[in-house]
Length: 337
Image (cartoon, rainbow, N blue to C red; front, side, top):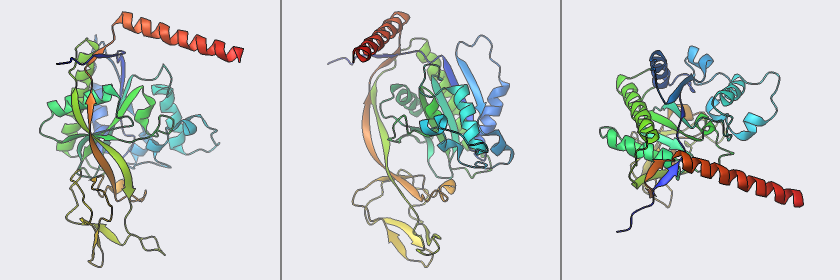
């Protein structure tokens, strides 16, 4: 039987755990506050705790002026800024200076941004890559360590340049989304699931940095296909239906063509008219009413991940030298041209 080759990646020396990117998603707010109280001496892993949107937190609001978790594209971070720019635009640049700069060698090695959803989604890691072996191995580890809660991996197929959320500032990053929990409240079971998930994530990073070889394997990845909005009145744009009772709270249960999708306020059942069976998630998420999203749909596929181990120092040195040499050669070619 052929043995899979181990992939070696750089050490994760600097990790950030962020809460309060949305000021009314309280599990992350209270967890980061709690973790800030813990001071671990002689800790080889540098873990930075960040309360991302303190002004929104004070008012227990998702945001003040605009959604902070949509403010981390390269265009927003590096474009011109108005004299009286929205608070979250200014704050995104502050966070980029603290955790990034995005796309630079100085950026955090790993950023974990904590979120709550009102949807029945369990614990999800949301990532922009389906081939980030660090994130996928962390996901695999959480699935193994947390058998009592559904743990899933959602892939948003967006380029690094266009990636818009706080976690995209790191070299590796993901949002940890846990629900269901109403915004503006904290539920003990949801808070505990997030706390346990963060603890296992940090334990995995410590084991990885120590040289542990992690076995490869296969995992299910849900790649987003599209969003569906609520039915709306063509004149007022008011919604005219709610999620059908047979679909409500059934996140990640396969939705087939002609399955009940909405129930009109008049009582009529509106069915799913898609031609492909897909997996719904963020079903009836409270914060997405303003975004025109009733639910999102994803395809599920199996992704094979290779065995993984941290690079040894000599491997890192060779890789760095090779990278520098490629850069010099490219510069010389440009000079000749």
